[in-house]
Image (cartoon, rainbow, N blue to C red):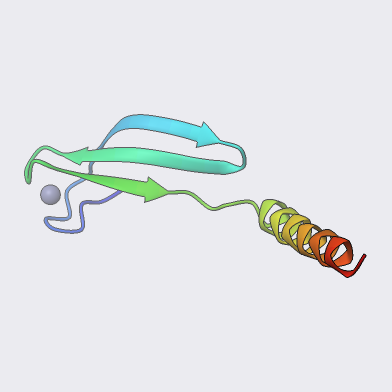
Length: 66
Ligand SMILES: [Zn+2]
């Protein structure tokens, strides 16, 4: 990871992995700034979330009709 300001290589200070998502915390010693980089979210995670939402909406809709 290169600093967007000065182009120096940044230090990786923290790395967190949530379900299917990686968040990395970088720090630039030259600029004294930190940058949080969000890794790619797995595509299957997005698809499964969208399907779950659609399913919830459909069930709520069914309840209202009865
Ligand atoms: Zn920098």
